[in-house]
Length: 124
Picture 1 (cartoon, one colour):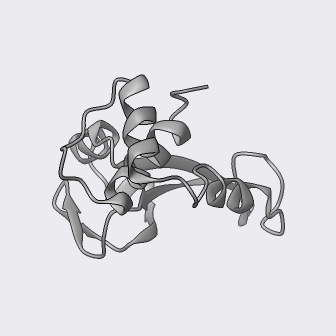
Picture 2: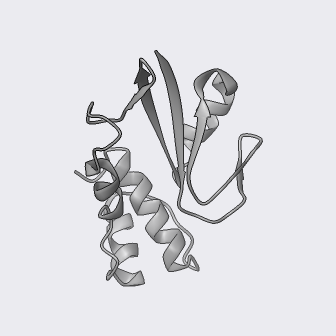
């Protein structure tokens, strides 16, 4: 049994945190390759979502516990924030959740903040 840490970066290609340059989208790391301080820094960044995936017997099992052919998790990821929200609607929702953001933030940054908050269980 091995654990994979998935860091979901919705900001931009090359976003840096905890000494890592992250690709846009999912970044997979073997658990033993990250230090506790790196994990703490990744968890503390509200723009990132950190997920632990457990593999038993070489078969990946995601959050649902089903096999790799289960598309439910990826379908859910794509629907966390509706694409048709305006910048003002995003700012309103983030304010309701007490999530800080710059007034000059672009839509993609606001979406990333909201997705990370929803993925981490805030706003439910």
